[in-house]
Length: 267
Image (cartoon, rainbow, N blue to C red; front, side, top):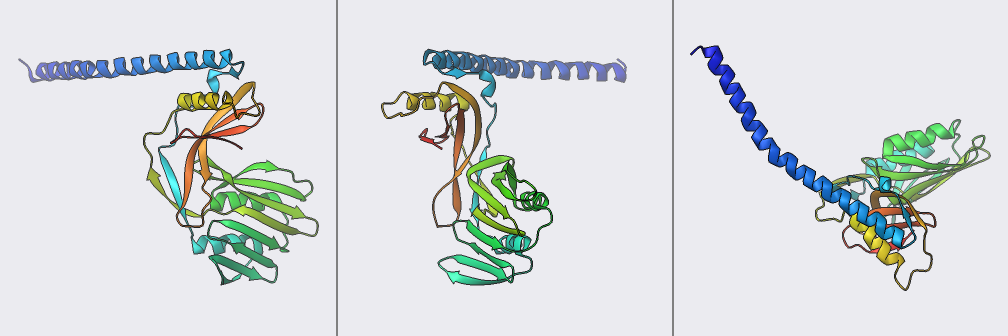
């Protein structure tokens, strides 16, 4: 038999083997997809029975598989102060507070990331300053009320595009080129793997249980969105840890479902 023919037969055999190995995988994937679609249908009917509108399109298909732990970074903190004040001096105030200052104002940063800045430095383009801060320190603009360079802009810290809902910075631009900043400055972090967290369907079931509990004061009529993110834990100790949550957007308010424990809190 010609070598070329033998080679062709071997290739065909290998292709058939790969196909045989692929069939169980495809079958398992189809079963999982079917089970997921069935759970979505049942979830939608459950919400409808409770007079709450839920569109299946609001459910995300994936969630982050790691959560960051934040640490103080002296270099990043100084860079942040410099971006708002220009070249700065620094000193320890005590109690884990770092103070950066110059003739334009001061910047106080605490061990839990809380920051307060008062600056009289001139900024010709507040929008550019906000965009520069986002790009350099990992934030995104979520709200802006700037009019002729005066007003407030709110930024939220993100990690890989995932928001930390309660880690925001608010920049208040005033007449006379002054700006004040308050909120949370989160700098360096390491990622910790997370396993065993609830999916979107389970989170919405927990949310519905919460809405039907005796202590529920306000009952929504529609779920308008669902996305994953984090809440910053209130602590002074390093590292600053985050709680992974599902954020349930409703026509009344936003609610956070802890992806590990299932506990629900209102924004």
